[in-house]
Amino acid sequence: MSRAERAPIRVLIGKPGLDGHDRGARVIARALRDAGMEVIYTGLFQTPAMIVRAAVDEDVDVVGLSILSGAHLTLLPEIVEGIVAEGREDALIVAGGTIPPDDVQPLLDAGVTRVFGPGTPLADIVEYIREHAPSRTAESV
Image 1 (spheres, one colour):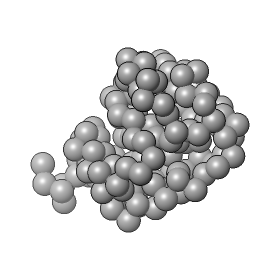
Image 2 (cartoon, helix red, strand yellow; image 1 turned 45 degrees about the horizontal axis):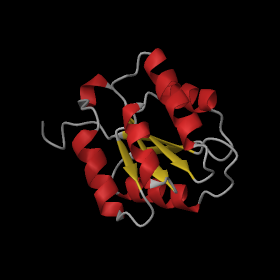
Image 3 (cartoon, helix red, strand yellow; image 1 turned 180 degrees about the vertical axis):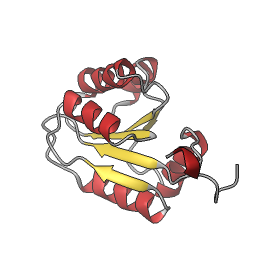
Image 4 (cartoon, rainbow, N blue to C red; image 1 turned 135 degrees about the vertical axis):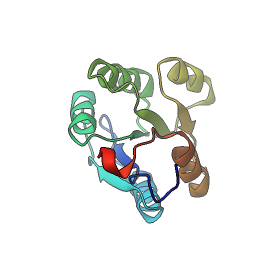
């Protein structure tokens, strides 16, 4: 499918938990928007249920979770489970933030498809999402 036939990729950027720092999430949101994606940013202090509801209501292709609080092993699997329970197992779920290397595999095992650490080039994130987001044609949206 050519790029012109594909509907813009819809991405939700969520900030789960009590983490009050969102500069990285805003930088990512802008980079994705500048790359032609439709971006919905949930804002700070979101519960897993709020993020799941927003992802379903906004019919997104990708859920990007930004977390710096250290609660990633608790909150991110809960979000994945909620998205799957809502029948959206096709959504690509990625995460970023200060996630220790030893915690990456448990997140992948829980259904997060990729974890981007601090300093990841924005172009790498954009490319990964473009390559792995579920495809939708402009007519299907």
